[in-house]
Image 1: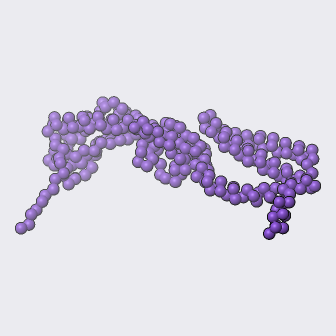
Image 2: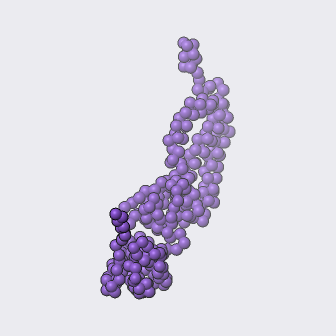
Amino acid sequence: MRKQIIDFLSFKLIDTDKVDFTVWNLLLLIFALVFTTYALRFIRNLITRRLPLEDKNKFVSVFQFIKYIAYIIAVMFTLHSSGVNINVFLTASAAVFVGIGFALQTFFQDIISGILMILDQSLHVGDIIEVDGKVGQVTEIKLRSTRMKTRNDRIMIIPNNKFMTDPLFNWTQNSKINREQVSVGVAYGSDVNLVKKILEQCVEGVNGVVTTKSILVLFEDFGDSSLNFSVYFYVQNGMESPIIQSEIRFKIDEAFRRNKIEIPFPQRDIHIIN
């Protein structure tokens, strides 16, 4: 045991007798560093040539990190070619690298997901999305996370890997306008044609409703206690949908009262057997 301790303490990390660092090694190291810098810059420009300037700037930090890794590899290979035993450093740091890899696993998932989102342009600032039942407007897209402003003016920070694993509803992917609906039930025996006309009139002229799109009224179903209708329309801004729907409901309630159309309560028939 004593001999093993002495051998460990007397072990040379760098055997100076075998180190031969020449001018050629120095020039080779400088060339490797310069070549790495320009090669990574060329690759970055090639990948981001069609992206907006704002998205291009997000790749600077990623390629800066890759450049540092490449620098370390170039220095280690140069030292190895000069006679420095780098296996000792690699063996000693292997456990550390494994621990860091597990700790940064989610972090790198977010980074890779953010890069893929930016490259395929699947999500843009200003898009209205639905995540975990919450609706909001995208305010900022970073490499690690995306910020969304909800309808309650709260900022929701979403890890980018969530967009790769969970379903994402993008309300403005196809168009900037959104289709909404308001549903209502009327009592059996009501004039259904009058109900359809009233629903159309209640939507017309409401601020925020797209006037160039047609208004559609559907007789949805014969319910247990009511005849169920829905009126479909388009809005300019999906973030204002609850306000627009509320205003339409106020107008429907007022119009139904004026035209003696009843919105029934749930009803049940009870049969008592003696």
